[in-house]
Image (cartoon, rainbow, N blue to C red; front, side, top):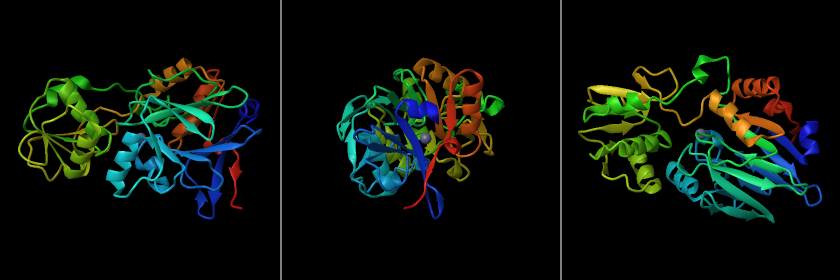
Length: 320
Ligand SMILES: [Zn+2]
């Protein structure tokens, strides 16, 4: 922890009677103390709840009612559609800056989902702090001193963490009799974007939620329609019920009974390593996902010369 303290940043986890709260808070600026919580549920003492994107394992739903929440306008729109309630926090356009209690926070796209954003600010001793959330493309990210990032595919010894997107396989699978399994938020919009970028101009049929999210979050992707004859995109669990002759799941995972086409919303472990090199931090905190991959990625960074911790290494704040 000393390395983080030297840089003027104290990452902490919160624990309640029910166990650890998700993710973490960053405390900084001892002269005028600030605490920003990252992809967490509501926790006492936070000045802001930064929501990187609208996937449920980043807990935007639970902070929707707080005026201290901060997310991109697209993330707010996605949260409202997915959870059917009003988002009460502040919004920004990804790529712009937002003032949070006198701290200027810059935002950058991570291309993980529509509206997914990284947050960047400096503390009072000039430490540059970057929080990425889940990430597909690090191209927009700046250099930093403290990097808080994910490792969904961060285990260098696991073959499943080494992949490239199978864009050719996706292109070859496109037909009017094809149905693609894709999560309603994120993957479904990526699939529509790839179809249109590849010149597919026919109608794309989608389940109701995917269709609503796609129309709200993307532009220039019509014609779209509800389920019917022709190319379909539905959640993987709804593929079986469709009459289509060819069925695929767009995923880097290996646990579906349909042909898999490797299209991921994440970078693989090589991409994560390259991102760390590009951002050249003095200290890294790997905060996501649950399980062993965050710890394994932190261990890999330490072995290769970059100081890194994962969530189990940082202090815990117990209930009052
Ligand atoms: Zn995600």
